[in-house]
Amino acid sequence: MDRLGTSGIFVQVAEAGSFVAAGHRLGISGSAVGKAIARLEEELGVRLFNRSTRSMALTEEGSFFLETCRRIQTEYEEARARLSRSQAVPRGQLRVSLPLAGMLLMPTISSFMAAYPEINLDLDFTDRLVDVIEEGFDAVIRTGEVRDTRLMSRKLGTFRHVIVASPEYLATSGHPDVPEDLLEHRCLHHRFANSGRLEPWPLTRDGVALKLDLPVTTVASTLEPLIYLAERSFGITCLPPFAVASEIAEGRLVRLLDNHLDDTGTFRVLWPTSRYLSPKVRAFVDYMAANLFRA
Image 1 (cartoon, one colour):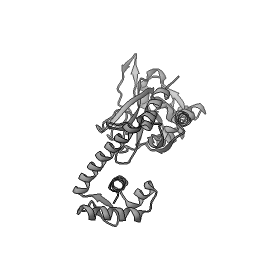
Image 2 (tube, one colour):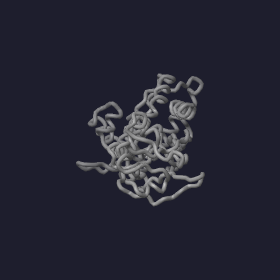
Image 3 (cartoon, one colour):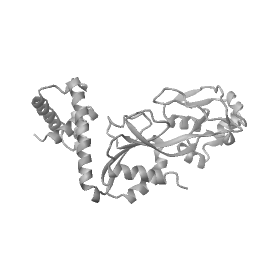
Image 4 (cartoon, helix red, strand yellow):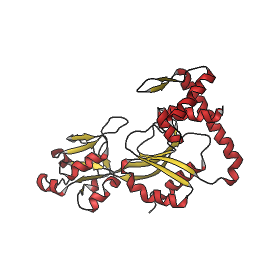
């Protein structure tokens, strides 16, 4: 048995959660994956997965074996890289997770693709808190702070939130001229997926943070519902500028209280901690840091 190859199949199954999903990643059938795992379990003399008709989960032995296989694969990749570093060219598939509003990052992403034609991008757009390691991402771009100690991070830049409402809403409900005016309006809030807390509106006066107990009319864990509701005059919301750039440019939403907002948003690129950083991940991290917020 090709032990290194079979351990790779095992890792894919553990990360994907099923034989079929792992087969899609590997380009082989689910039944072939299942047979490989069965042979591996027979050779090791232990059960690696608890299986049912609806789900499968690692056994205690499987969890131990997964950690070992990942360490071996990391050391194997590092050894290969050291042997070929003199002629290493960034290439291969790069799996990246972006926020749903990441379409605003696509000009920089596309220029990266032009600069590194041998790197094939697999882009996943979601606002949920992904598990970078378990889901097999090479890199993730997100806003906010980093809480996962298994990840390295690099700051890409900061941005200022915008408070917006539709012209129709302002015509019927009035135009807030100072932050305190928001207390009389319908406020649409974003809830952080990782903590469950409402994202604060970064209001200031004369450079000093201003905390107001704003009305909570509607709450959403992703940005799209807030944009949809604001466009249809259900209230005022506070969002990253890249999320509503087209709506503002087309006049569907209007910016409010710009002089009372502080820089609070931070873009970061995250990747799994490793003693060895592959050329494709290094190229992506360096390029995004150098170009994403370039004037």
